[in-house]
Image (cartoon, rainbow, N blue to C red; front, side):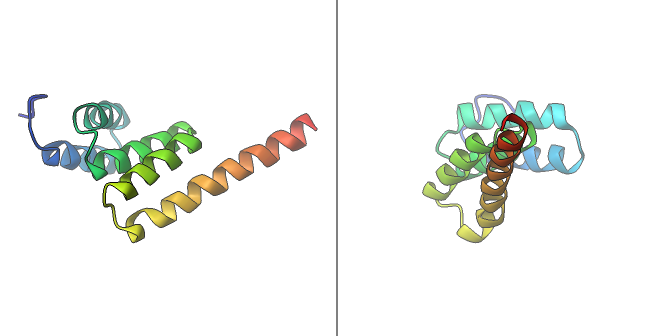
Amino acid sequence: EITNGNKTAAPWVALAALSYDAGNREEFRQVTSTLVRDHPNDKHAHYYYAVRQMEDGDYRGAEESLNRARELGMPEEDISDMLRATIYAQKWVWEYAGIVGG
């Protein structure tokens, strides 16, 4: 059993990966919230939170979370594709808004 008093993020990181892979989005949301709240200096917490933010359409937030993960030591190769996707999605949203509102 994982408790909130855990000193290490490792069990939460594993649970985030497992719940995401299993398609259990509600558990994934809960786990990522716990990760960033209880382990704000863990690179994996910000990486998985960015995944959640991308799913929610919060591309600016995802970009910020990925940059934070990078600052905390997440290897560039682990985040570069996701970071490009967030930037592309933001660009697309603004272009679409310009077409619709324009």
